[in-house]
Amino acid sequence: MAQIKVIDLEVPEGTNIIVGRTHFIKSVEDIYEALITSCPSIRFGIGFCEASQDRLVRYEGNDTELEKLASEACLKAGVGHMFVIYINEAWPINILNRLKQVMEIVSIDAATANPVQLVIAETGQGRALLGVVDGFTPTGIEGHEDRKKRIEFLRKIGYKLG
Image (cartoon, rainbow, N blue to C red; front, side, top):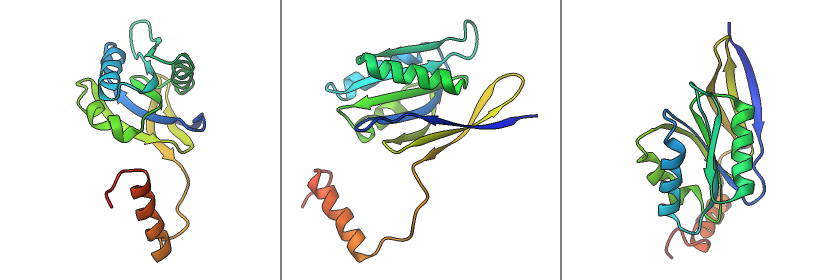
């Protein structure tokens, strides 16, 4: 019988979080290399839940506070082969395609600055990540003014021309 749990992950103001699954102990080093070569100014911490052998939370990064957040998030979740990355001074859009090319990565479940909850099933063997709650429930469909604000915002931050 599985027990369902919801675990809140801290997402500090100005920080983004990426949650995914991978399958091998060298993942933390390969993710580190993917991040630093994609965006040299990025600040990050990576945590990875080892699922066999010593079953430790492995970590890497170039920011001590973000390494601590990622490690603690992984330990709190306790899901084998799950990884968590906290980033500053970059956006997920800057690194996601490169992360998807890391051979060990199986899936990416969330990349966000929103509040994050992990939905986890716990069995006698361990824990499984069932899904991620990313942010909040929509309140309606955008209207003409909302659409105009979205378009203006994307141009203001430089993601669209014009």
